[in-house]
Image (cartoon, rainbow, N blue to C red; front, top):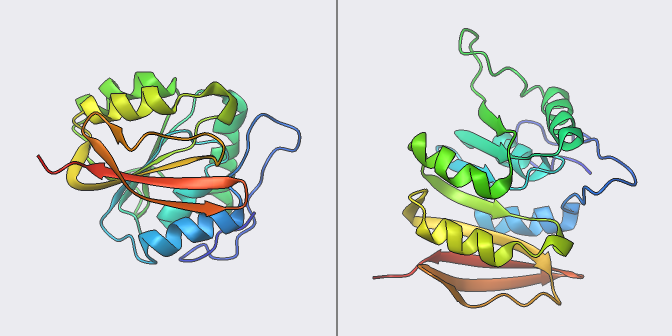
Length: 194
């Protein structure tokens, strides 16, 4: 598992063998970022189920202005910190001249929505990759649809097993595209034109 492009290109990321963390495969990440584009300058990126941190780190490497991970598993939190350090993105101290702005919320995914709203954050890209077995897709998409975290042009990307069929509409969210890579599907949602 490596960073594909940008400032940390080629950096080998750490994952935990035999753990519950299922990192997004390199070819799936590559397909995602081919769609999102090479340059994410100025964008706010939410990696809602942080896992190894690989998707958010890829966004940072490609110039995202701010990346927020939500992860409640301590082993995964340590993994995200370790991978940020490997990529030299670990400086989150405002007194230093770091250009990497990131935050790790150590809470349950669904508890994160009101906390992020209180911070008045609005995201350009929201990446949702919950554990396949937990089937949190509907709760996440409906919760996000009701939240104030999205811009008019925000893109919501859901990684899921291709046998797990997602609906076309969740509240204000409308699926605009779906791509498949092996057993994995990426479903793309945006706000419906009201």
